[in-house]
View 1 (cartoon, rainbow, N blue to C red):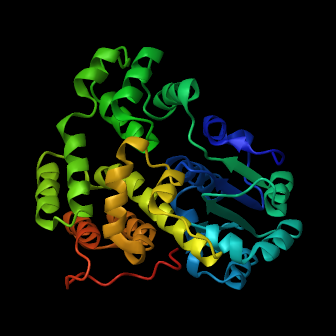
View 2: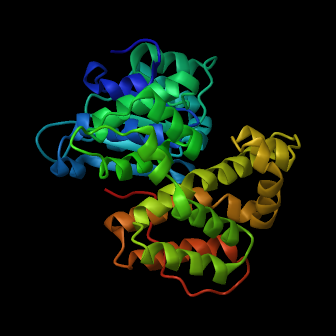
Length: 360
């Protein structure tokens, strides 16, 4: 129900208790949680695959508010249901159209549901308070400590149909780190290896989780960010030959790449406001761990602001293409992403990008 913000981990445990409102916002620093919340909202509003005809997705940087308002005011194509309009990476959209959004919350269209996917939505703003009062506001901040391991156990039971005792959850977090997307992927693998009791033990985690494939994925990403194209492509070939799924590989590297994109965005926003923000501070604010700050600083310098600002779009492009929006083989889709990361100024013949500003 409308009211104060709800934590994403609580929302995902019982989404039926929090039905979609005219305007919904998934905000916070954990992209995995935001994606899961949006998937739940999409199912609640649109139902099965046929409902996709009533879905409009926009990239926040380039979308005019008038287009969004027009779609929200248009009756859904089938079934008399509501249309869902999703604004991805909506931070700039919210900053640009804050007054219009505040007015919209007060007088929303009856025929549509607006969902905002934002990293930051300060609680002292009128928009935050308005959505909290009259919409659905889901806090997708990353859980930590005991709350993280409890979520992991609940998620294992709810999504992967296995038991994850506290000791096993703590072992998994210790080995993989507090990256929710990676933890989910490891749970999916472990779920295939449990016995008849469907219980993941600490011993199974130690024996199975991570391993050379996880290490090779980071070697591949480091090589790409260091400009070593051939090495990165060789590691990709090794991973694919071992049976790794392209969607899983993209998920593993996306969290790190989003931090570079977030740091770039912070620097550009600071400069637009007449302030100066150095690379290290931007990376820290974007969530880069202290023990890898030195390496990350060098990689972001090489990536540069122009390509850093494109990372969100590249990841979205790769994700959509891997999920069926492109006829290219999955290997080529991942190779294209690696080349973009590794080879500034190199003329590489790539397939043309599709228009991401609107895809139904």
